[in-house]
Image: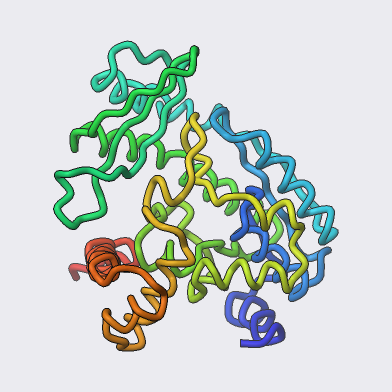
Length: 305
C-alpha cells in the first residue's frame, strides 16, 4: 500500500482528517510517527506522550527528540493518577509481596522475566519475578500462576489508560488512532486487548521487528532511538522485550519465523543461520503455540444472537 492509499483509507473509509500516535521513544512508535508525518503532513498528526511513575525518563527525552525531528506537535499526558485510581500499583504490589514479603515499592524495583530453567523441558515460557533491593541485591523466584496473572492484569491498566487517552485526543480532533504494534507483537499476542492493541489503523502489523529497524533507518529515525534496546517500559526495573516475552534476539527469531512461514525445513533453517536444529524446533513450536493461544486477542467480540 502506497502513502496515498494509506491517506485515502483514513480520509474516506474512516472519515478522519488526521492521525494520533502514542509515542514512547521506542522504535515502533517512532517509525509509525514518521510514516504518519510523511502521509498526512506533520500539521495533521498529533503525538501523545503518556508516561507514568514507572516510566524511564529516557522515554520522554527520546520521544521529544523524535517529534522535533519530524516537526510533529506533541502533548504530554502523565497517566500516573489515572492508573493509580484503578489500583494498578496497589494490586500489582500486593501480588509481588506474596512472593517476596520484604518488597517495598518505595525503595525496591521489580520486573517479570523469562529465565532458563531445567524444568522448562524444551519450553521457553517460565516466568520469574525479579526484585532489586536499594543496595543492589537481586532476587529472582519462579512466579506462581495466580501472582503472575494478577501482576500482569494490574499492569495492563497502563496500556488501557493510554488507549483511552489516545481516543480522547483523536475524537476531539476527528483524527484516527494509529497503532504501533509490529508482526512479532501482533501475531504472538504481545499486546493488551483494548489497550495498545486498540487502534483504527495498524500500519506495521505485518513487519518483523528486524524490518522495523531497517525501515527506521530508511525514514531517518534518530540514531539514539535506533540504537536503544527495545524495552517494555512497564515495570519499575529496566526490562527488555526479550527478557519478558521473546527470550532470544530478534535477528534469530525473525529468520526462524520467516523460514517456517515459507515452508523451509527446520534443519535447513538451522544450517543457514548457524544455530542448533533443536533451538529452531523449540522456537517454531513456541511461536506456533503463542499464535494459537492468543488468537482470542485478535478476534472481534462474538455475537450470540
